[in-house]
Structures are given as structure tokens and as C-alpha cells.
Length: 216
Ligand SMILES: Nc1ncnc2c1ncn2[C@@H]1O[C@H](COP(=O)(O)OP(=O)(O)OP(=O)(O)O)[C@@H](O)[C@H]1O
Image 1: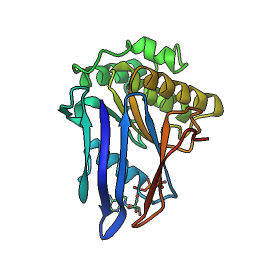
Image 2: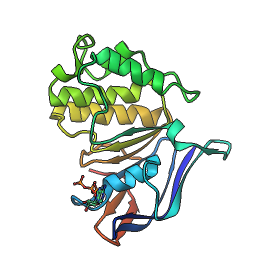
Image 3: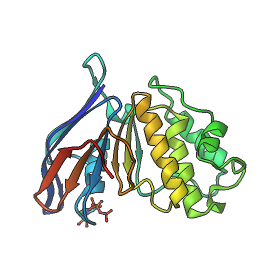
Image 4: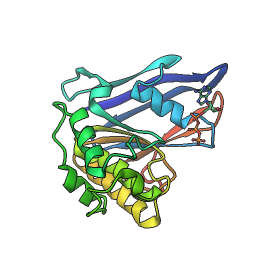
């Protein structure tokens, strides 16, 4: 499986935020997108997820046999918002996402196992809105686990997390990559992994990418 972006150009209104963005990721690899506020990180992730159209260029996800795969069926997109209903219990929210994302790309963990995996055993019965901001974000991360999808698209996934949960996030991504997944994340959280590429969006009209052994 590969995720390949070629000469992507992203625009908001009259402003071109980035152009000539290109990268190629294989199983077990991740791309970290950095850049100042407003440089277009969220725009790029939304574009990769298929939620926005690119001005030009293309992004393709291909299977191990080279066939083009539909990104919405094979990717998890975690945006700034957690995409959970505050009034529903944690378990109900995750059960919804598990069934919503059910596809042939993989089963994923049970709801309880996913809650355990993000270190929140015992909160399944609580309304999502009762949780603290950091706990809510952790449950949003558990959404990635209840349905196995090979490509994770993550927009500031560690927002509101404490230091310990930052490490938990790095571990979740590490496990995902070890299982042959791919991840693209806008994050300033050092992942402590070696198979990380980086892409820095530096504002309108410029993008510089590099392949690095470590991103720390
Ligand atoms: N829906 C929209 N309509 C018009 N302009 C938008 C829209 N959403 C974002 N923008 C503009 O696009 C630019 C890039 O926004 P984006 O959210 O992609 O940046 P970012 O790098 O993710 O920022 P941050 O680090 O603050 O999250 C900003 O100038 C923003 O005002």
C-alpha cells in the first residue's frame, strides 16, 4: 500500500496556501506536517481526506496490488473536533463509529478494548460530555482503534493531551505503523520514531519536504 501526493496545490479563497506538495509513503511510514498557524496544515489534511478539492495535483492511495483505493473507505480522519455526541455515552459514541466505519479494511478492537487502550477503563457508561477535554481527545483517538483502517489522517491529535497522553499517542501511532499502517499528522508532538518524513508548510506559495531519519 502506498499514499502518494503529486504537485498538490491548495487554495482558500484567493490565497494559494501551498503548491508543489509531494510525498510518498509506504506501509509503516508516517509524514508529519508542521508550519505556523494558518499555513494550511488543516487544509492539506482535509484535501487528503477528500473533504476539499485540490486546486491541482493529486493524491492517490494504492493497494499492495497497485489498485487505486477510495480514501474515504480506507482512512480515518481526525480533525480538530472530536466528532462525538456529548449526550451519548462514550460506549455509544464508539459503537456508532465502529459500525459507521465497518468495511472490509479490518475489524478493529472492541469498544471496551479501545477504551482500555487509551487508558480510560471505566468511562464507557459516562456521557461523552462529562469527560475532561483531554479525556475527550483520548476517546477520539480510541475511534481510530475500533475500526482498523490503514491510513490515519490526524489534525493536531494531541491537542488538550497531557504529557503522559502524548506518549500514549506516540505509542498508538508506533503500533499502527508496526502493523503496516500509514499515518499523516499535523502535530508538534515528537513521535520518537525513525520512519518519519516531514513536510513543513511555510505559508503562501511555499512548501518544503524532507525525508528524515528522526523527527524530534
Ligand atoms: N472555510 C474557509 N474559508 C476561507 N478561508 C479559510 C477557511 N478555512 C481556513 N481558511 C484560511 O486558510 C488558511 C489556512 O487555514 P488552515 O486551518 O488550513 O491552517 P493551519 O495551518 O491548519 O492553521 P492552525 O495551525 O492555526 O490550525 C487560513 O488563513 C484560514 O483563515
